[in-house]
Length: 398
Ligand code: GTR
Image (tube, rainbow, N blue to C red; front, side):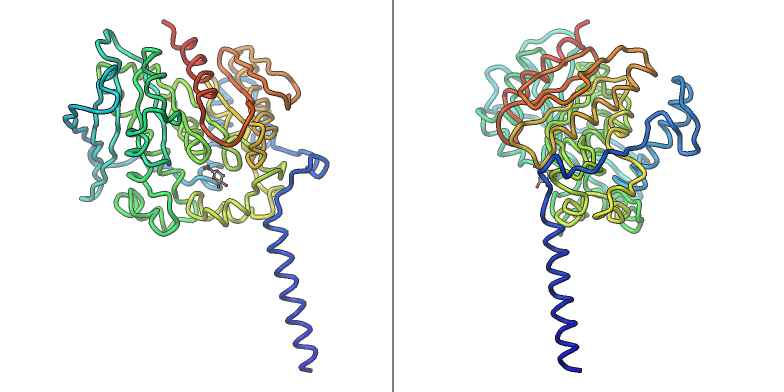
């Protein structure tokens, strides 16, 4: 009897060990990628064929947005009682030779509670006219970023050099990027009920919310042209940028740099980071519902090309790097390719991306869509910025 129990225990332990190992072993072998079966952007959930912009916007776009809210990123609450913008006085800063810095405290109130997000803005010195703006969602420490003029994660000089306003906020002010503390920002203070909902917003949704509040500020600042605004996020910030761009049509361009799993990459390819892996390491990024798909990507009623399609017909740029296989460059590209059908077939903005993924270094820039694959590792680099700003410059030309 004892022997039997011991055997059962050992079997259980080894089974658990195998399962844990299976969870942690990401696939990097293209021959092991399952045959791709992803939902068609043009067939609604009740089987209706979507033919024009009216069908797309009223039926399909609405249901896709709801699917992502329910299953992946959570409801994105937009109700609050008050928003105010307090401009702080800044005299000297490391960039004062060529820029004017402004720090704005965005204060949002709901049900008697308040949350403050610091938005840092850099204006070209002596500029005239109303300027386009580039906002970065930063999961890197912003005070550190602003001290380091050589840093290329937020290259103030490059952005300003293009005659654009450079803006950044730290996700720490909205929802700390930390398993223990994530609810200490807007989730605990302004929207505690979200924490009780299985489709409630978590970290990534909160960061998207933060970018929307920055846009609220841009809209009322006469020095900024809010119609020419580009939102940039890298990696986890790229996932949040896509969710924000999908919800908030005020962004003219959304950029997702190496956003990978839960960002631009197709989940059903099961290449690189998996749903289970991301939900295990970062359980506070997505809804509780998303965990239903751990190890079961095939049962997802959506895939990430549908998220990208929600941004059409506005500007969308996806970027990958060769050594960042964890983020699945091919999956990121295919996602953009499948989403591009909405640009072409619904909005008649001819967007012909190459039909196959090019695994060599390449850049494709069309009027509304951009993609590049560069050499090197996971990072937001000068190379990436050069291309994003080039894309923006063309689109923002008056
Ligand atoms: C990784 C995570 C990725 C990506 C990345 C980042 O650890 O697995 O999904 O978000 O972090 O943000 O740099």
